[in-house]
Image (tube, rainbow, N blue to C red):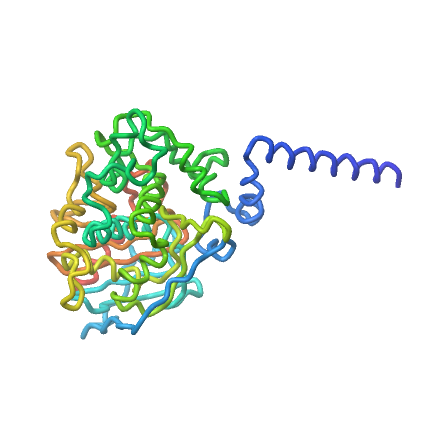
Length: 383
């Protein structure tokens, strides 16, 4: 019994030392990471983890349900699509043709209204909100310096960084996009309860505006700019600018760092469903117009859907760009394979949400599953 008590005392002391060390070294965010992710058997963020974080609500107004296509669900999934859905844990797969639901299916106990984490698809919304702020005169243009809104970035190379650089992932900061390292700034940003403090610790190490480098921190900083420019919280601005006007059928939520600091995780973490996510793809497909109302400037939308840098044809301003089988697609993309894929000439939107994607080809590279979801959708529509 004495030996057991001694062992327990040693374990308590060790545990106390570990916790104290985490706080002393400013890595106490790992406590939250262990509690919410690692102890649940995950090595990274997962589809339903939004339930374990603080969130702010985004209300909807009068729902505008998608109409069903005259050929609604008349074609079954291809064998290739079924295999991909099983292999990669799809929870929703929807094909929208001519602004009507042509095919939809849900898996793993999810349904049409089930919430799941957008992850980085949220970046497209943030870029759109930047466009809205420019349209409304809160931000002068894509060329306005970030320094005008965040004085901590007014020295040296940082003084040359513009809001357009943030939207196009060309800030030149030392952000490290590493999802599986518990000590990376990406992991810290996901779990830290003071996200602004994390962002203000970034350094601009390369000349901004020169090249594309995928960095979630750019979108987070862009959200801070938008809040300063508009005087509105991001979740409120999204509600009034897009969620209500687009007729989303469900209210949603956006993760924040903590109730105290109340800053959205702008690079990720809007929890919604496939058909409501698809509406933002339709808005861009229709050049910023929705039901006759110009919600976004058409010139801004067009610029967003073209590469900024010739040597990085895969990215515009907040949107991914991909050529496949002679067709040009633009898309929202998120961690673990969350996609809204748009082909404007064919008037097609493909949405896939799920637990994982095919093995990673590297940060920002296209994985094989994207091609599969496109290819199999077109096979189905050709039948």
